[in-house]
Amino acid sequence: MENENTIVLILDMKKDKKLLKKIIKKYDNPTFYLVIDENIISLAAEILISNGWLGSSTVDTLKNVLINNLKQLREIWIKFAKSIKPNIVLKEADGNIKKILEEKIATERIKEIIVPLSKGYNPYWNIVKHILEEISKRYKVKVTIIS
Amino acid sequence: MKRKIIFLVSILLFLLPFITQPPEGLSREAYKALSIFLVSLLWWATKFVPLMITSLLGIIAFPLLGIMSTSSIYSKFGNTAVFFILGSLIIASAMNRSGLSRRIALRFLRYFGKTPLSLILSLLYLAAFFSVFTSGHAVAAILMPIVLEIGSSLYEQEGSETYLKFLALAPMWGAIIGSNTSFLGGARAPLGIEMLKNFTGKEISFSKWILSSFPVVVGLILISTIILIKLTPKTIDISKGLEILKIKNEELGKFTKREKYISLIVIITIFAWIFFGTSLGIANIAIASVIILFIFNLISWNEVEKDVNWGVILMYGGAIVLGSALADTGVTNWLMSKLNISNSILFVIIIIFISTLLTEFMSNTAVVALILPVVLSTGIIANIKPELLVLSVVLSAGNAFTMPMSTPAIAIMSSTNYISTSDTFKFGIILNLSAIALTILIYLFYWPLLY
Image 1 (cartoon, chains in turn cyan, yellow):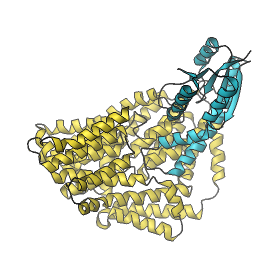
Image 2: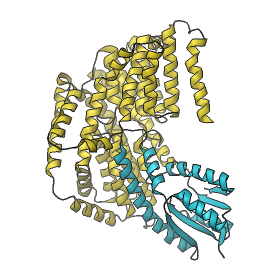
Image 3: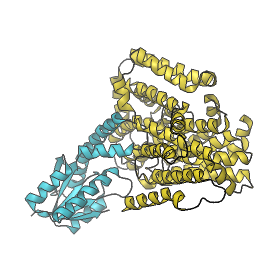
Image 4: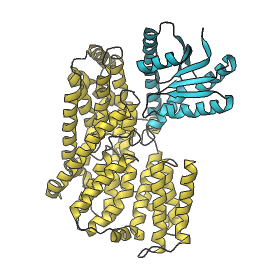
C-alpha cells in the first residue's frame, strides 16, 4: 500500500544507489515526485551568472539547456529507480513546485517531505529550500533532507 | 539575521569618522573615505546588495560626505576602461548572435576531438583560445550547452562519471586561464590599466599585456594538460558524442555573410588594438568597431541589450571612483605608512597570495578595485615598478579556480552536475598554487626584461 503521508522530492535527478536504498528501507513505500520547475531553473541560471557581465539572453539559454538536460536525466533516473525497486511509486510533474506541493498536502494529507540531496554548490536548492521552509511552517509538514 | 548584522556593522563603520577621532596621520576627509572603503569591502564580500549597487554607494557617498565634489566623482566614472569594456561586450555579443562563436567551437571540436582524451583537451584549448578574445564568462556559457550535448550521450554508459567530470572541468579551466591573456578576457585588466594611469600616468599596451601574461597562461595550460592526460579515462566510448558533434556541424550550414563580416571586423579590431592601441586608444578602437557593426546592420540594439548585464558597467565605473578617491584623499599613503616594507619581493609574494585568496570568495574585479589602489601606492614608495604590481594583482585576481561563487565560469560548469565542489576545490588548489608559483617566477625573471 502506498504511504501517502510521505513524499520524496527528487530535484537534481542524480543517480545515487546508496541514498535511494536508504530511503526505500527507512520509509514505507513513499511516492517519489520528480519535479522540474522552469521558474526556479531560471532563477538558478540568474544566480549562476550573477557575478559577471552576461545578460538576460544567457539566462534564457542556460535555462533551456538545463531544463532539457533535467528532462533527460529524469527519464534515466526513472529507469534507474525501477531497476532497484520495480514497484516504486513515481510521479513526474512540471510546473510551480510550491503549487504542486500545496496541492499534494491539501489532497493527500502529506506529513513529511523527504529531499535527497548531494552536498555542494546548488543554486537550485538554495531557492527551493526557502519554499520548503515556508511550506513546512505554514502546513506543519516535516521536511527531511537526506544526503 | 546575517543581513541585519551586516547592516548594523555598515552603519557603525559609516558613523565611525563622526564619533571618533581619525587615527594619527589620517585627515578627517581621508578617515571618511576609509570608512566608505570598508563598507564597500564588506558589501562586496558579503553581497549584501548587488555588486553594482555597492559601487553606486561609493559614487554618492563621497560628495555627500563632503570628501570630493560631485563633478569630480562623476567625471572619473566616464573613463577609458568603462568605454573599452562597453565596446568589447558589444563586439562579443555580435560574435555570439551571429552564431560565429558556436560555429568555431563546433568545427574545432569536430576536427580535433576525435578520441576521449583529444576531445577533452580540445575543450581546454578552445576555451583558452576563445577567452583571449571574449570574456571567460561568455566562453563558459557558449561551451556549456555543447558539453551537455556531448555529455548526455554518455549518461547511460557505465563509469562515465569520471569522464563527464573532466568534460566540464577542461573548458572551465580553459576559460579561466585564457581570460588572463588579454584585456578582453575580463574587466580586470582594463580596470588595472586605468588605475595605473590614474596613479602614475603610465600605461601597458594591449600587445605588451599579452606578452606579459603569456608565460602564466601557457604554464597553467600545460599543467592542466598534464592533469587531464593523467586522469581522463581513455577507454570510454564517445562515438555517440562524436555523432552529435557531426550532426550539429552539419546543421550549421554555410558560413553566412553576417558571420563573415563580423569575423572581418573582429580581426581588424584586434589588429588595431595590438598595433595602434597606444596611438589611437583601445576604447576608441572598440567604440569605432561597434559603430561599424551597427552601420552594416550586423547587430541590433535589442540583441545587445539582452546580451549584456549593464549593471556591471556601474560596478567598473564605481570601482575606479573608489580607487581614485582613496588615493586623492591620502588613504593609500596613510596605509602605506603603516606597512613597513623591508623586502619588496616578499611584499609582491604577499599581494599575489592575498589576491589569489580573495578572488575565491568575491568578484575578481572587486578584488582588483579594492587591493590595487593600496598596492600601487605602497609598492611605488618601495621602488617596485607599478606595471609589475598591476600585473601581479590582476593576473592573480583572475586565477579563481576553486569556489563556484567566485566566477560564473565555475558556477556555469558546476550547473551541469558533472562536477562537485570537492572536484573544483581539489584541482583548483593545484592550479592556484601553480599560478602563484608561476607568477612569482615570472615577476622575478621575465617581467624585468619587459619593464
